[in-house]
Amino acid sequence: LLNFAAMEKKHLALVAGVTVATGLAAWALSRRSQLPASKGLPIAKSTKSRVPPPPVESTIKVSAASTPEELAKAVEGITKQHGHRLQHILDVVEIISGNWERAPAAAELALAGLSLLLGGALKHSMDDDRETFADLAVKTASGAPPATRAAAIDVLLQLYKDRRRSGIPAPRDVLAFTAEGVKDRNVDVLQRACRCVFFMAADVSNREVLRSLGVVEAIMSALRDEGGLAAAQHEHGRQDAAQETGVTGVALECCAALRTFVDKSKQQIIDGGGVGLVISAMQRHGRVAELQSRGLALLAALPVTAEQACALANTAKKFPRHSGVLRAACEVLCDVTRSDPGSKDLLRDSGFEVSKLACASGDRGARDWGMKLERALKV
Image 1: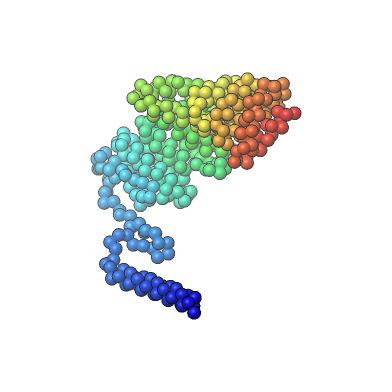
Image 2: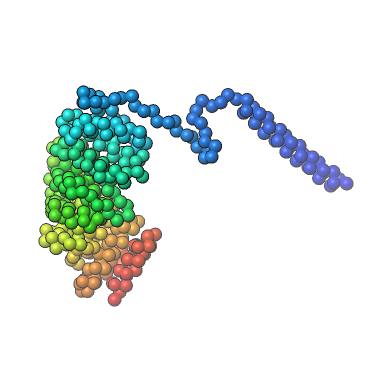
């Protein structure tokens, strides 16, 4: 009887607790319904996320009589989401009509805004107008200061960037403008132009046109004169950190762009001392893992001596967690052992260490090349 009474008491307490909790919840819901409506943004019922307010059209109107300040104000402050301001950019560019001296600041702001829109609001709807936008950028920036030319190349980069590397054909005048950027001594223009070449050259027809325009020699010249580029930036008042970052970016993009021309320009690269230029750039920027990865990927397609391969292996060991560096290093070492079997004794110690790191990598490609290198060194 005592046990039954205790159980009954616990049951009654549980029922009472549930009743109280239910009553409190009902009271809270009733109080919430009596509160005034929120003054914030409305809540979408399907996603429960905030719905952004509709874009407010700018009241700025421009015409041929507008001052340069008014033209610049019409295109300033554009972000990736401001697709509704595309017409402002087109109006300003039409007024400038390829004469950037009419409003230098407006020309730069218009191209910078167009680049942002192509990477944001217009990203999935630019295929039909690709050549129109490219022609607009080239005509607006031809002969303009470096900042405007860099903004124009940013536009071309958004138009012809293809992550699948299948390539998008480009008009010859667009390719010629990009090739001139590769020959430029301004770091910002040169870096962007080399990156643009990397994507454009994925298309065979673009690659042949760029090759005929002297892009290969221009890239090698940029690698050869990297110190001069740094000095030139210093003379123009660039800060040391920005200067170093820009020159490192030039070396990185040069290696990536040059790799796309190895198919038919391999001998030209070898005769021009391309192997030494790439290794020197990698040594100057020894702490930049991405540069080491791209440099090694280029060297994997070029003849490398056993001594150079040994030095590259010792450098690759400094990046034990970068699968790109390890994979490319294994590929270079495999090529050297295949072309020069007598180099295995020199490469065995450093090669086994690199292969071990590659086999422990989370990247499947790096593991495969690590196992290939291990087998090549054991034979």
